[in-house]
Image (tube, rainbow, N blue to C red; front, side, top):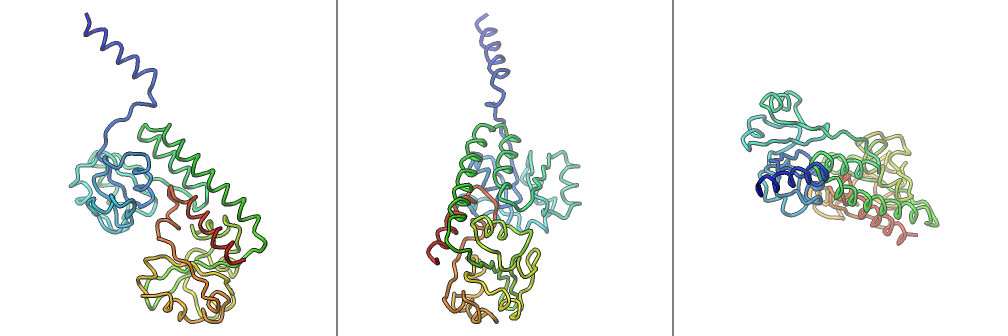
Length: 283
């Protein structure tokens, strides 16, 4: 009799509090921002493998790594016996994910535009998917509050500075960000002018000396990975055309960690506030 009572009680709790029910998964995360969201939601212990962009938080670096998200292997993914694969639209090749689905594994694609609404939307989506909606809502609202605060502070700056994001893939190839990129969303969201977008760049495009001079950025942003590729800030200043810009002449270069600045993850609000502060110091 007592056993029946407790069984009934557990059933009632499950029905009344469905949002609190959290099933265990074996998750393969195929994007750095998704991995970061999972850890922020307290679900890092359910991740069994990640892609090469998943380097935050530090615990992510100890997880098995499947390599670059565009060159995945179905066999490698399935070797970790996942129950759920979460990726964005860049993961592939598509036939690899089709093979994973055919093996009976749920594959969820998180598609989103590169806007400042994306991080909170992704947090809510992942949290809902994994039954931790309440925690996800708290995290999303805290992020939105920081983004709103940064936008307000950026709008109050005395001058709109011209900012260019440089994506440094190698010593021979230099790219600048433009419309439709996370860097564009961040620069505009901080109240600045995206110098790359203003000269007509869309996505990340090769930057010529002439385009650099025409853009006339007051500030250059690079990532730590790009800086490591070149070796030093002096090497950034030696990129053709940089010396003829206000940013180059004043050595106005700031460095962000890749995922922090362009990952569109849970730390987006912090990165945006940091960018606004950098802009304030240059006024």
